[in-house]
Every structure is written in C-alpha cells, then in structure tokens.
Image (tube, one colour):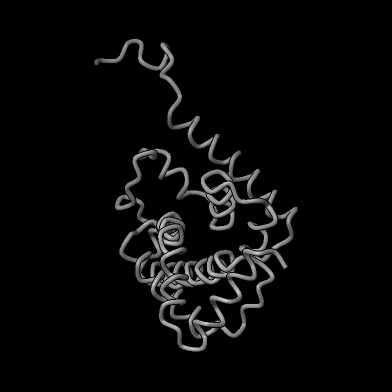
Length: 195
C-alpha cells in the first residue's frame, strides 16, 4: 500500500476511535480544496458552506467505510459531489413547482455571482455554470487541480474512459460558449447603426 494511503487509513482509524486531533488534521488538509470544488459545483458560497458541513458530517458517520483504496480526499470529494448533486436535484424540483406554465423556458442554473476568484471573469463563470455537473467536475479537477483521469473517475463513480469523455466534452462546450460570448464584433454587424 502506498505511504499516502497508509497515512490516510491511520488518520481515519484514529478519528473513528475519537481522536479529535486526527479529525482536525483531516479537516485542515482537505477543507479549502473541497470548499472551492463545491463553490464551482453549486455557484453559491453560502450554500457551498452548508454542503461542506454536511459532507464532513456524513464522512464522520461513515469513517468505518473508508478502505484506503483511494486517497482520503478523493473519498471526501465523492461524498461532496453526491451532496451537491442532491442539493441541485432538490432546487430543480422547487423551481419546477414555482414556475408557471407560460414560463416553460425557465432554466435552473446555479447563481455564480457570489463566487469570486481572481483568475475568473464573469463569462467564464457563466460558461462553467452551463456545463453538466459531471462535466464541470471533470474539467475543474483536471485543469485546476491536475488530477489524473483515474482519480476523477473514482470521484465521479464512473470508468476512466467516461471521465475522459466528460472532460473532453466540457472543454468543447466551454470553448464554444466562450467563443460565442467573447468573439469580436465584425464590421458588418455595426455598420449603419447609431453608436
């Protein structure tokens, strides 16, 4: 067993036995990246904080199920991804109940206004919000965190080849979306118009 997995297994075993310092070590090592991941998945920092808390509560209750087959952070991300997916499902149901019949074009997209990262501009956040949850997760884990496709597959609960497909499609959709919103204005589009 690789050294990192041995450390993760030891930490989870100590935390399961009531060692608060071990649990704090787990939290400190994973909290920031999990929160960033959830912000991109949910699009709302307050909701992401709530889901982060739920993730750690669920993880604490399920520490006995961690088998050290993958890094602890991957295991936690899988729980976080499941919680985020459940939250979106509930929100979509609520939106569907409140949308009138005439407003059938309403779309449930996460509110990304509150997510603030220096490297991101408004159009990129909008483009990311248009991706499916699996595509967005695959893209962020690969591009921002340099995760392997095997790790991404473990997180998403799919085959490695499927994780590659999610990543490829996310890049294609993101590229097309940004090309459409950021393309330069062509002369014939503004000629003759008042400016």
